[in-house]
Length: 400
Image: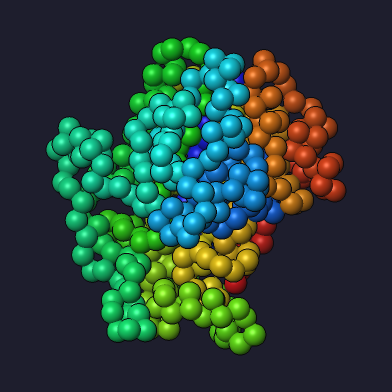
């Protein structure tokens, strides 16, 4: 059994049609949910990139693997996993799996993805590395223009300086975007793996929709800001909350940004989600064309969510709100029940040994009861709801 793992960064669950959003176009992820299982209470172990990704790699909570911060803002924590740490790629390599990782790594500074056996260009850092040699070569080979932005959206810091970049217009066609580049590289890997014939694990880690939202006009202006329902928590104050939340809000300049600009930022964020969905669609289409879909499990999730103005905050940070801890989780396994929705709590790191075990077994049909057990529903006090004829949906989610 092959494994295709798709992950986004800083992705709100309420931006997907299959999770109830009536405005944002996400047909490819919606279709994945319609042919698989959607987890409605899926939670990241931490809303910080590096620790969350280390948890996916090891199957451990952050306090176990001890990567507790992004290296860019580290204050004395470990920056790399211990040499003796268990990681799932090693278990798959022992079963002669081909291993690929295309996209964001962000799990340490001294050891990159290749250190754990993954093929693919090493792409470090927290945001699209537009100066990376492989991306530059991709643009040059195709005669595509380089990265250039304008119309930057920033607030003002308490000291009167320009704040962090939140969004901007990207002067490149969609084929030149970093998202299209990553999908292309993933497709190339799929083609190589198909030609080889051995089982594979291929991860594609998009850097978006993490801010800053840098998009071509067609996506920057895709959604009318008037469609945006602002989070109710924008009306909150910081009275009675930890002071760090007020400081974090000031750091991200929330109060210096007009409310109509906040609406526009959310609309642009939606455009980013649609752009990534289209690239995921390209990967899934090629999987079908190569005749791999019936032998490949597909899993989609995110490392954590995003505030987009909820609780008067941007980014993610030192606050345990649903906006940043609840994440999308969709899995499709050949031969198991379709159109399922699971309502009991789950985590992307809870059962990687089960995923590895299933990946290593020959393909066979699933019974509904076996699928319930594999999802962990019985252990968590709930069961998936599966329908043979209709996609399970939830009411529109209004986080914040």
